[in-house]
Amino acid sequence: MDRQPKPEFFHILRTQQFDRAILDELCDLTTAIRKFAKTREGLNYLRGLLAHKRAMLYFTQPSTRTFLSFNNACQILGIQTSEIRDASTSSEVKGESLLDSLRTFSSYVDVVVMRTKEEGLAESAAELFDHIKRRVPIVNAGSGRDQHPTQALLDIYTLERSFKEMGGIDGKTIGMMGDLRRGRTVRSLCYLMKNYRNMRLVFIAPEQFQMEDDIKIHLQHHGVEFHETKDLNSALPELDAIYITRIQDEYDKSGESKGVDLGKFKFGTEHLKMMKPHGVIMHPLPRREEIHTDVDIDPRAKYWRQERNGMWMRVAIFVKQFKMDHLIMHGHLLD
Ligand code: ASP
Image 1 (tube, rainbow, N blue to C red):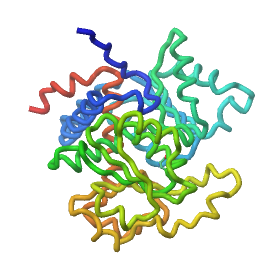
Image 2: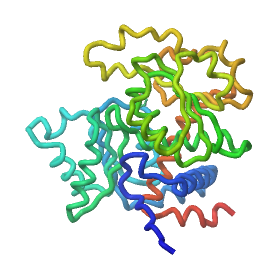
Image 3: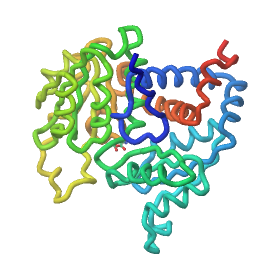
Image 4: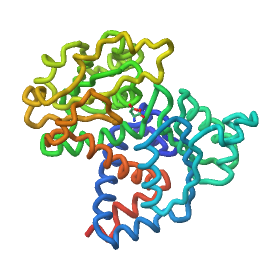
């Protein structure tokens, strides 16, 4: 039989690199890690697991959750961290290229996690690292408008958990609302949909912020059904989940967001009764006004849980990347 080699779980650059097997594996690993973390003994075990590793957190684009959850994931595993959160404090101001700076990081650490406002830098860094002696993995923690692969993994985990009693993610209808054109979280999540059976997507956005053609072509190519609408109310009853995003106006070139009427793309308590009883409300956060805070107490609002899931999924990513997953999955502490 013609066996394809298993894709390497080394650099994490874009969600197209993941197949169903790895998604399922990461979800199971995350659940197992959460079980470990329930006891002091388990937490102590986790803290020793990667105590011999060091990570660089290079975050030159603003971040609260992704930075903190990576940082805390490192702490959970005993990984020591160094960080740069502002390029103006690095030798880039002396004219050093980012790639030379990254190469410097690779001299000191075992993994580089990077968030940049530019697209494609994580890929360039990975290419560079693939050709130097000290090959260190790169984790893309957000690359401009393009991708946010670890967010998509935690989103999958949140969906998986939410639909656990309903046959998992397969066959579900997922709505995505907001700035779909420039929202890297929804873009990354869309690329994962081909791994699930009979998925349907509904893109709810003003015309100016509808999903880009590259994603639509990808979905068509993989037979993932989707349609576009501006009408939240008529879409809601058919959705199993709605994933809401904010307007990404930091990417405005000439204030184009200001002219767009967003009034109809907000989720309030009046929408709760239009949703299925098992429906799921997600948001990558930070939110502005696109979800009213009164929605937070509804059990279907999963965004705060989604945030916490992010930390555990990032623990799982490091565990898998450093090939320690067998110690978790077959660990005696789970007995
Ligand atoms: N935190 C997410 C991101 O970094 C969503 C957002 O900023 O709107 O893309």
